[in-house]
Length: 244
Image (cartoon, rainbow, N blue to C red; front, side, top):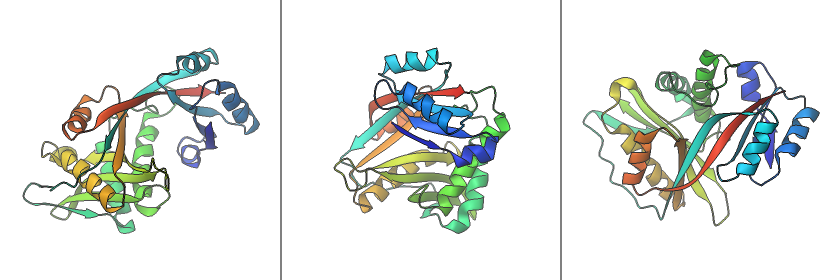
């Protein structure tokens, strides 16, 4: 079990929040005990989609389902020749781009229905800000993201992707594509397709040969892009919220 307090959620929602990955059976009780010791108000728990016993234990403890994620992985990455539309160019982000990326993320995630939005006790406007803050911090802090890739049109940033290395120094080391966003006025230009290719090229340059991505079960459009680029389904998980 991996469990820790979430300072970002405390800052955003004003309640002591813990996040837990319940990767093995029977960990619900231990997670609840940990939260009691740390005076947690909200537990955000994620467990494998195959662990129905743990799902039922969470439900019996009073937690409720807020999200279902599916995971795709591509092994043996190959470099892509990325063809951007005329007038667009790609570059890596710097800390100076944090404010612009945060603003863009706020536009791209407006109306997004993630697990924060599915919780009726959380303000939807505050839930929107979780993703924009996350994107901004990704530009400023290497502990949040190892790289942020940008696509610009003119002088405006119109698309971004945040990337994180996982399993460092292990045979399972891989790149995770975490947050992706395309400005609403620039959708339909295959920019998300290009971001996925750019991310794979970054992984190869960083010495990684596989990449992981995840999204909500209902987000079919990006899953189609992944399939076209050789990604395959590799797992699923449920997200639960439990209020104490």
